[in-house]
Length: 450
Image 1 (cartoon, rainbow, N blue to C red):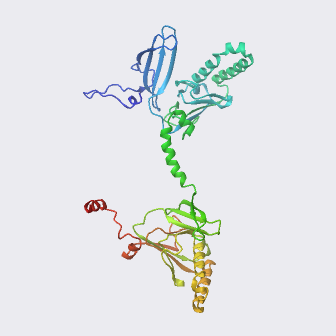
Image 2 (image 1 turned 45 degrees about the vertical axis):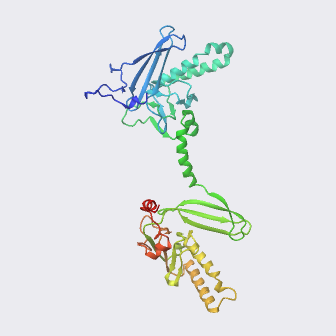
Image 3 (image 1 turned 180 degrees about the vertical axis):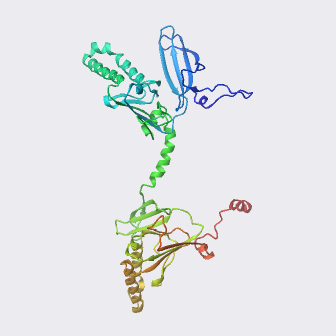
């Protein structure tokens, strides 16, 4: 039936026939139901089921069905959605203030839950068939359901029957709207509806909320397979919020250690992979950053004029293909030195200082007084830069374009930082292994070689 709801048949000659789904209106005389002979489940004789395809204004198409048996007088009516389960569930919250609100049309599907918080009253999901009625009709239907077994309860459990009778009186007072109350209709399938008499304008008394179904609600609707695809997508996103851990060996003592890996999105840049290894045996610690993206079409050169101690707190991503220069100190750190780093400018300068202090030319018998003094002087100047006593130009030159220096004025331009993009030279492409890399036409070449 759901497929029919999307079609408006057209005759071969081009003249349009009446639409299968017509607006729900008492004045529409052409709304005639289809009658089908069907079995009565009460007396097992044949009765008549009437089906009506209709459209509720400002809502959607539904199927209204009604059964009647002339032999035993059994009747039954319900509605079914002519569409599919919606992408999101829906919750209607109506503040009922007058009897006019009690006349609002309501579509309640099988899986919808109706509640009146003031009475702590609830019609659970799947406890009633779907219905096209009003708010007053829903309450009346609940009253009839509670009254059904009252004679039996009065004989077996008179206390329970008395309490139910008191509650029925409270429900009847709701119909008189002596005081305002809240009516809530929650449907995880998204196919229930509460009328807005002011449509298409906004209804101040009605709040409509769409939400994402839980796994339990999806299971009740029988759509676990569909939801599992979304859950798989969510699990991939969750990996970005988790720290992954795998076993490895310590590069210093070769003892078993663990390496932590995390995907990090750097603002105004790209995604990187941070890897950290910690050895409990010897205490060795190391961290490294890998670019999460491809080599950029152009190389990047970032120049920062360090003028203030606050510049030391800027985030910096130095990839393994990046060179570092400090012209004022005649210093250059080549590609591959220190590996990839995601730290602050102060942290990178500290790492450079440590690298200089551990230089073999400053230690042991191989050291000379001149070289040791030059390296010590360089270390002191680096410390002055960290302390904000010396102004320098700090340069990151990355032919792969995967390095980054924080712009504290983002998204505006930083007056102390200059970013340049340039075409790589042949030697730089050779170092990156791009000259021998073929990304177009390789399939044809492979076929011809065979």
